[in-house]
Length: 309
Length: 261
Image 1 (cartoon, rainbow over the protein chains, first blue to last red):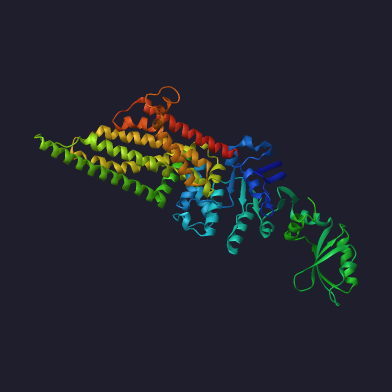
Image 2 (image 1 turned 135 degrees about the vertical axis):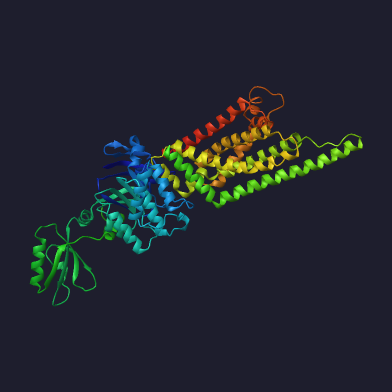
């Protein structure tokens, strides 16, 4: 749906993007991850058309972004990082105003308003000015504005920043529900958020894409092998996994002392070989399934340069 | 069209709900009232002196001409007050949108630059018109006390309205370049004051460039006929060109922001 080619952007002496390239497929929820200053917000601002790159290009369905202009803006929704609202305008005033920007009026506006009020949990707040809303309500209003015209493409910049855990969970459920129906680009530095809602991840560091793919693909790329999650009990305590055939690394999981994440050779026989080894040691095997590295491990190793793009 | 109206409606709603706009409006009307009252006191004092002098000369007592001695003074004071307040009314039009981040939402919506600029300008102009209308009773209250030239009052208010339209358009340009309403207000005031007083820089009787050009560009030079009850096409064109230029430059400034220049 979107192809980004070699984007460069600089603010004075500061280089924000240096040759960033990636693609976004229709219906995907792409997590844009990266430390502060990685170029996430600049990328979103270029994709939304708020900013133009110094060099490089963005194509939407094969056509240059600059050529589409207003047509594309009609099809996108955006929740910026700061979630800007007009303090003296009510919830309804915000939604009516947003509707006027996207050409919604009369019955269409009413239906759209009722739909987003219901979906974003803003019922009963119609007449409340933005200045009197809680942080969570403000965030919901920002999202309702972005969704009012039913955009195909949704850009969300740190949508759960500063929210309490309950609201974070609600908002994640809401975003997860867009999968397949809309294409979502979610910029965040909350790793658990990406794990919870995204089906693909792009890790940025100092203006470059340093890793891209699904969590499984990224986990596999860490050590070139595969991962297995194993739960077993041994009569003589935890075994020496270095002696197990094909095991490169074993990381204990949980507190019961019976669960490990094993990094093994990329061999289709590895699970069977490992199960046999456990039984040879007198162990009882309870679970053996494909495992994956946590996003935190992936992120830290990628950003620290321990694994290349 | 709908987007333009949406911007205008939001501008009006926020202006009338905003404490800042309320206090600015209140201060404007209060100061206009004080100016009118001080002018009236001065007129009364001068008229009493004139009556006493005439009586001493054995002539029938007579007051100063209401229109020449009071109305003209009052309208001049009101025009200067407008010059001071217009930058304050226009300072937040775009600078506040930039500072609050709402400009990012507007610029990533299908809204064009013209509807944004026109909606903002019309909103501010309506607020200014409303405030100006509140000062009208101070002039009309004089009517029972003499032969008040109502056509002069009408043309003067038309002139003040046109000056407001032009100056608010100019303040939009500065607001497009800064996040700070204070900088926008200071820059607008400097620009407006320069335009206002341009003819003061010209040598008397000078013609050609720049001597003759400066009075032709001076706002005061084009406002003065309105304050005297005269409506000249050249003055109407001057304010229309100034407003059009301001709006177009503000639109271009926004377009360059969108283009990331």
